Every structure is written in C-alpha cells, then in structure tokens.
Image (cartoon, rainbow, N blue to C red; front, side):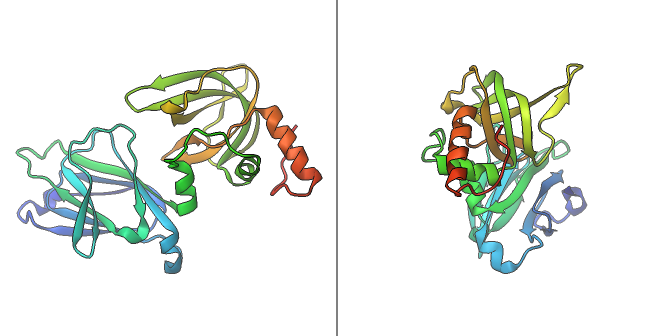
Length: 259
C-alpha cells in the first residue's frame, strides 16, 4: 500500500512528487490531493522484460480529486477523468507506452477528496486473455482448454448454483459449488457452512449470458484485482474426453487427474 498527502504541499500547489513502486501489484491512495504525482512502476525484474508487460489500473469506487494521465516524454493522454463513475472499469496500457501522471484538480474543499486506484503488472499474454475484445464469450478449443488447465490461476470442477447479473457493471457473478479443487492462486473458493461444501464466485461479462444449468463444468480463469475472472469453462464430460484423447497421443501439456 502506498499513500501520501498533498496537504504538506499546500503552499506549493505546483509541486510534483515522484513515487516509486517495486511491487507487481498494489494500490495508491492520495489523500487531499494538490499538485501532482508521477507514479514510477519499477518491478523487480530485468529491464529487458519491461516491453512484455501490461499495466492495468482500477480506480477506487469513490476516487475523486485528480485526473489520471498516461505520460510519455512530456505528452499527456487522459486515462481517467476526475469524477468519472464507471464501476469496475479497468484501464490497461503497455508498460512501454509511458508512466502514470496524477494531477489534482482545483477544489474549493479538498478535505474530503481521496484519489486512489489499484494497479497490476502482468505479461501481455495474460492481459490479452483477460481483455479479449474480439470474442470474449466464444467457446474455447480443445487446445485452449488443455493449456488453460496448465496456466490458469484457478482450476476447479463444479456446478453453477446461481447467477447474479449486475447491469450497472455489465458483469455476471457465477456462484459456484465446488466438487473438486485442482488449483487456486488465492483463497477465492472456501469451505462454507456446517455442511463443509466448497463455494466461490467467478465473474464474467454480462453479454456472455451465463445462466444456471445442470451438470458439472471445468472452470478455469485468472485472478484480476482480487477477483476470479472466467476463462475456459467446458462441460466436465467434454474436458474428460479431450484430456483422454490428448493423453493417448502424448499431447497433453500437463498432468491433471481428470476424474
């Protein structure tokens, strides 16, 4: 967590402060913003790998008091306008496209203004998986499913208990009952209640039209800003078939017990 207060610069409204962040994910919280911040993301990886990185930011729901720009060699491109209300909106750009320049907007009363956002650095391939604009709801091919099993942040066998649609955020929340947990990067799926059942929630786009249905699925996907985002999700019996076919040919990219 990174935070600073512009109140200490009240007499120098044109002050620009540099912030250096070494983590691959985290958040910035700027209380009572005045002046500007230059946010330098310097992850602990080889600089040669920077060109393969995508940066994503997600403003806090009540973030206010500053505009957020993408800055490169003195040129500013507006990313998030002060007061813009787009719940769950995520803004992504290539690491080599520039850095973040956060400039406070003139305020009569800054005492209640807090500008903040979460950030994540990820490989361009993973970012493309999360933000596939061309066909985000299309079924995965057999090869894509088998690769997703090896590379996803979570892989579970489960059923759809319920689906909650959030029109404002243009998202659907899939409430999943877990029958088998193969892998999870963070504890999204947990034991609940006295019955000892594993449950969790996965988010996807509203336009995909996910509905409750019978039978088991293989759910795969990525963690993004602390939320599970749906990737490939074939019916489990279809996954068993494609896994067996690939294994018989020696083509499955990794081992997993599909039973």
